[in-house]
Each structure stands twice: as C-alpha cells, then as structure tokens.
Length: 339
Image 1 (cartoon, helix red, strand yellow):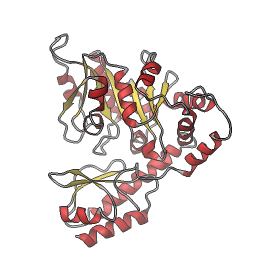
Image 2 (spheres, rainbow, N blue to C red):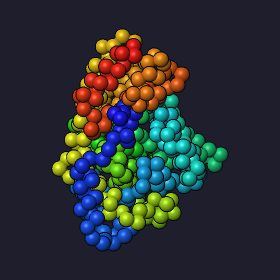
Image 3 (cartoon, rainbow, N blue to C red):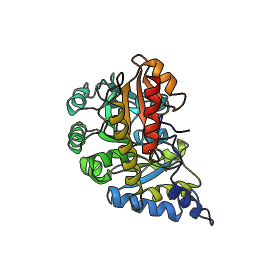
Image 4 (cartoon, rainbow, N blue to C red):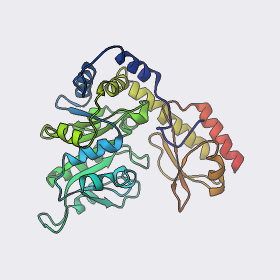
C-alpha cells in the first residue's frame, strides 16, 4: 500500500532501525540514565541552545500535555487556533488530563496573529474567568501553513508582555524548518519560544517525541510530571537512539526535504486537473484540496487519505520521507481515472 493519508503511515528510516540495533547490543541504565539519552541531550543543546532541557515521552499527545501542564495552574488557560492539534486532534486530552480551558480562536489558515492573541488577554485577575497563561502555536500548522520567524517573534512578544508563555507544537517542525530554510534555533529559541513539543515520528522514526524547555526558568519539576502522566519510558535509550539518528548528518532535513518536495510536485500536477481546487498554500508536506465526493471515495480505496472537512469534502494529502515521484504519478493517474 502507498498512502497519502499521513506521514505516520510511512515506515521507519533504515538509519533509524540501524540505530536501534546498535543500542540493542548490551545492558544500559534504565529510565533515561543511559549514554544515548545523555548524548541526545547534548545534541538538542547544540541545535536549540545551551539552556535546553529535554524530556522524552511516548507520543505527541503526551508531549503536548506534559508541555502545557508544566506551565499551567489549575485555573489557567491556553490560547490556540481553533484548528490547533491540541484542540481538534487530541481527543480532549489537554482538558481531561490537565483540567485547563482551551481558548480556541477562529483562524482562517490555522495561524494565530499577534492581534488575535492580544485581544484574548482579557479580565486579568478576575476569578470568574480562566486566566490565559500559555499561547500555543503549531509549526507547521494543521493546514500545512508555516509561521515566519517574524510572526513567531511578534506572538512571543505579546505573550510575554502579558506574563504568559509561548508553546510550539512541533510535530512537523522539521518540515517547517526546511520550508523556511532556517535552523531549529532560529525558529524557536531565537524567536522567543519557551517550550517545544518536538516530533520525530512523522519524519522517519518509530516513536520519538520530546518536550524541550528553552526557557531556563521552566522544566525543573517536569521529571515528576512526566512520571505521573505515564510518559516515562523505562527503556528510553531506544527512543533516544532514534532521535539521535534523526539529528545526525542532517537526516531530519533530508527526510523533510523529500516530503516537502513531493507535496510541491503533487500540488503542481493536481492543480491542472479540472474539478480539483487547492485550498491552502502548499508550504510543507501537505496538500489540501476540494474534490468531488464520488472521486475521493473511489481513489481513497486505492490510496488512503483523509477527508478533512466532511461538509465541503476538502481532503488532505500528506507526503512522507519515502514518497517518490512514481507514487505521486500513480496517485494523480488514479484521480484522473476517477474524474
């Protein structure tokens, strides 16, 4: 099967599998006290800044919940886009586990603006109103759009001016860095981000997610939170080895470049098909399009993909690190046959 449903459908990169094999040769200390996790901590500090503290978790939902929980008191709230992953694709986990309120602001392309964020800081000190303490952005967004460095800085300034923190959900941070042609540090630490949920599973790993605390004032008690949230991996070295492989020799960049390039190729080819309308700028590895329902139902039987908006039949096509030009050509041919 070849899929355009999610980059999670793709297999693990061979270099990642080889890294797991190398770890599997001997005993190591458990719960992150191993040499591979220590090496990964150093690598994160090289890429994000010397003050970075990293905490590995089991999955992306766990990363976001741990990141947000570490910055919130029970009566506080998170400002986010109405399309944010924490709002529409976490099964209500932030609200249920943290007990916080999500203030989801309506956004056209899943991107917050400084003006929207500033207007959401209201009723400060009012005990009847959940107090905003975190602004959360997704990079790249659920619509495949990307925040520029200037946009992130502007949102960070608003958050910090209101005594709040800026969280970045970076499940596809590698794809965004490639799209912007910037380093991880330039689009996070240098831009004023306080905490990052760093994802690797969507970029060639089996399971590798981490919470990165870039603000030195945060993260001291996170090890206790991670354990109580059931996100502490006893054999953490296997996840650390995967992330190390991803962050070695720019594998993260090569994988993301391939995925992004295939999305551009796909967009160029489907845009020439009558009856297909691309709805969002194609900036990373996602293509959103309006497709006749009869076409999407037929094609998805051969190439799985998701219907993003059930009312308009807007679909999402995702490319992965292993998507090839032939995959794109075969997929486009299937669409043309269905049309």
